[in-house]
Amino acid sequence: MKVAFLLVLSVSFASAIGIFTDKGPIGSRFGIPGLNASYDYIIVGGNGGDIVGFLKVTNQSWANMSSTTAHDFQTTFPADWPEIEIAPFAIGPNDGVHNFASLTIGLLATFSRGNVTISSNTADAPIINPAFLIHPHDLTLAITASKFARHLASTSSLHSAIIEEVIPDPAVRTDAEIIAYLRESMVTFYHVSCTCKMGKRNDSMAVVDSKARVIGVTGLRVVDASVFPFLVLGQPQATVDMLAEKIVEVVLGDA
Image (cartoon, rainbow, N blue to C red; front, side):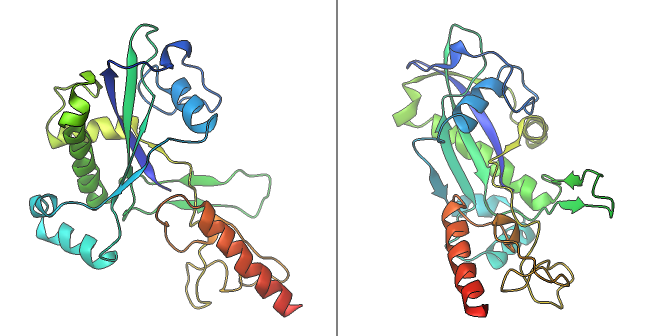
């Protein structure tokens, strides 16, 4: 699933954050008091953000990475594959006084892989390990993305509206400090996928074949985002719709 984190800014234009408490419908995720309820209201209770940007890492940023890291990104993903998603939201601490805005940063090119473990007893809950940021390349990209968010906030277009950076503390500057903040504050974009990979029957990680049939099980198909073999760019709804349309044709053709 996509990993996301926030740069929270105190701003001079109005937002509705002050009306919320810290008790959101999903429960606590942020390690930072005051963000959960506003995040739930905007993301879960609404229809997402008004603006979303998909960005490529700049040549200068690649140059600042190790040659191995840059090479792995550039050879694993297509040349036109954006690595970073950025979306502004009216999310901030609930102090009832100030106005806040956040730049939400998402990682679209990740190397970390989680896992889901189940038992033969259907009464046992699955063990879900998202394994966020366990791969060093993901940490490098997360640091790069967070620095870009700060750069964006400092541009002439936004700087005049920003009073100060609130979260993380402006004193958080070193890579180690940024990583500590990211581990404390990261959440997901809720685009859970890739847990029932579609692949060839001789692929030990494949769960369904190209017709969405569960391998080794008769009469069962999986047709949702879980069969993606890798995380798709952007929002997954259109891809799920196209997948469903394709599998409907397959089912009708097999009838």
